Image (cartoon, rainbow, N blue to C red):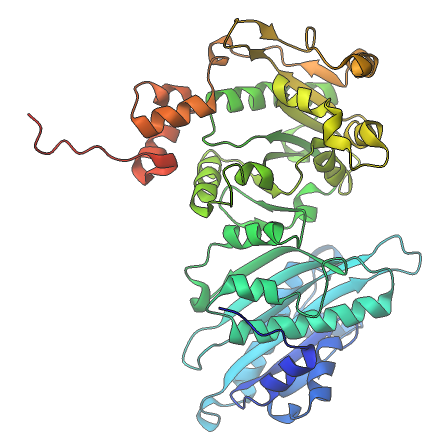
Length: 475
């Protein structure tokens, strides 16, 4: 399907000319930028039931109720607005007198850039609507971060985004991927970041929001997305803000006992080093787009298989476009000034100390290390057993390039790189690539190399190329 690229004015006019689409606009924080497009396009009288901006907090509270901790730019506030306004439409516009009407409520609650330009602004944008008058309501909710450094430009960007969302909801509901792409019609990714999207309702009953999150990263709309063990999309700022962060990167295809051993003992040391506890620490299993693209384009089924297993084990997953470790740590530091720890294997640390990765950085490897080892970030290093000669590699005998030896010694001496001590030596000969071969070829013994219960999931769902053997006709 090739969609036409329409301007906001063209989209607003198309909606205005459809007499079945009728609803309200409630915009708080950046003017009435979205509804302005509909007023200017012409024919708005048969589309707009009401447009409002309840800027005063007391006035807003009187309409939608008070918020915990007086936080108004939240997903909870947005959903309250959408549902309150929809209830008013249904109460005031009788269905029997308005047959064929497909009601909608559009809302946003945002904060634009402040006068000191220390906060660029962000917000929540959403629509609650019907594709058919007899159907229940659908909701599409997104979180945006403004990149422009001018409040007026941010307002204009918000207006175009709102029109794109409303148009996409009605004209691209049968293809959410195209709907997501259309959000940037007449916009550029350097003006706006969308770092969370959530679809719900009968029109999207078969939509997996994790795949929709993957599209955001794949299309360059955001650098990273996060979902919890239940598969729910999470706003990165909500779960990372002022938290200690401990991350484990891998392909997890599939997750092995080595991954879990590295994670558990690395986390134990991280908590001891920084006096962290469960309440103030966020754990992330991170997969980069480069890992997902290891064999060409992204296999979405394979992607979901990895995430499902990690979720079953109770872990929160982050999908990112950070091929380099320093970009991941730099991303974390935008949300927190607390402790950051990364568990990795020796082979991964060798990549970190490879200057080839940093050719595109003006400051080269020194700039990368400034971002990677910022503040008191610490690497928890898991040993590697060479399968050819049996040599055990740790931070003590790791060989880096000659021109980086002194730099490596500096980080080692200052305990920015520490060895994971309590690893299980039995797991050092487990390699995920070998396990994959065994799964596909039905070799024996691979089940014991995975965390408890993982093999059963792989077999039950036919993951990673596993196929049930048929014994019919055999004696």
